[in-house]
Amino acid sequence: MASKFETAGAKAGFRREVFGEAGGCPLFALTRRTPGPRPRIYLSAGIHGDEPAPILALLSLIESGEFDARAVWFLCPMLNPVGVARGTRENGAGVDLNRDYRHLESPEIQAHAKWLRSQPNFDLAISVHEDWESTGFYLYELNPDSRPSLAAPMIAAAKKVCPIDMSPMIEGREAKGGIIRPSANPLEREKWPESIYLQAHHTRLSYTIESPSSLPMEKRVAALRAVLVAAIGLSARKA
Ligand SMILES: [Zn+2]
Image (cartoon, rainbow, N blue to C red; front, top):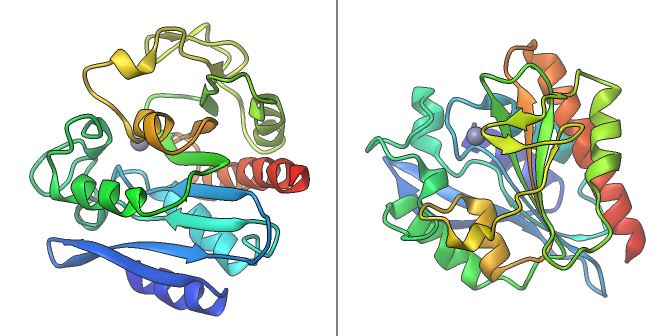
C-alpha cells in the first residue's frame, strides 16, 4: 500500500516526506505546495489499521487529481503501517495510536508530531476514519472560533451515497443529524486523539469523519470521497 502511494503521489506532483519508520514500514507524508496564497489542507488516514476505506479513499483522490493547485496539501495517508499490515486497530505494540497525542509515547506518534511541528498551520484538517459499530455516516466537528461550518454540506454529500447515523447519541456523545460537536473542552481530556492535538497546535477547524464499516467497501470509499470533495471544494473556493 505504501508503494501505491509512492507511485500515485509522484505522478500527481506530491513530494514524499519520510518522517520515521515502524516495523520496517516507512512513516510518510505526501505534500504538494502550490506557490501563492492558498488554503492549507491537511488530511490523514490509516491510524487505525482495521479501517481500510479511508486509505483507499485518499489513494483514489490522489489518482483522480483532486489534490490540484487550489490548495497546499499535507497528506498523512497511513499513520499506522504495522496495524494496516496486520489489520489491527492498534500498532505492533498494541497501542491505540489515536489516543496517544497528549503524551506522545509511541514512536509513530512521536515522529508524526515532530513532522507536524515543522509544518505551517492548517486552514482545515480532516482525520478520515470508519466505525465498525455504526450503521450510518457521521462526523465530529472541532470549531472553537465558530468559523463557517462545513459539517452540513459534508453530511449532505454523504447522504447522496450512504445512510447517515441519525442517533441522538453516537459514541456516548450528543449528536444531531450525524454531527457531533463536543461541548466540553476537548483539551481537558486525558487521552487525545489526533484531532485534539491538531486543534491544540495546528488548526482551528478540524473534522473527524466516519464511514460505517457495515456497508460494502465500494460504498464506504465512495461516501468518504464525496465528503472530502465537498469539504475541499468549499475550503478552496474561500481562498
Ligand atoms: Zn478510527
